[in-house]
Length: 129
Image (cartoon, rainbow, N blue to C red):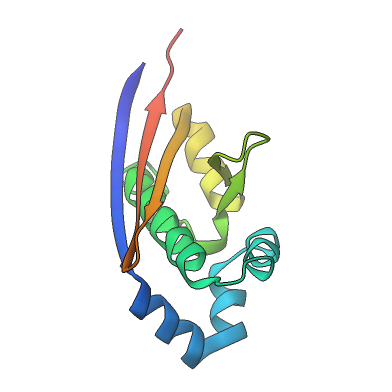
């Protein structure tokens, strides 16, 4: 196993709330997948979860950006999904799948949020036989 990239990001909840207030559905359409939007719709307060997803997407992008084609990855190419146990994981789509597969990479992610911010760390790992 070898680490090919690490990404970290922090999003302040006030910034995420302002983005939602100003751009609303336009921001959600541009930044989130349909599954992520459905997840947020189930939350009483979607802001911390929205911020965590933005942080995760940016952290994954940072972990993949130095791989060939990595800078072409878009927001909706990276999706935060919940495993059966409830743990957040990453599903890759479009260009992100191509980049990860081309490098033999799997992504690990960890999310957290407090009263004021959400953060994510992503690790791009290559498993070699």
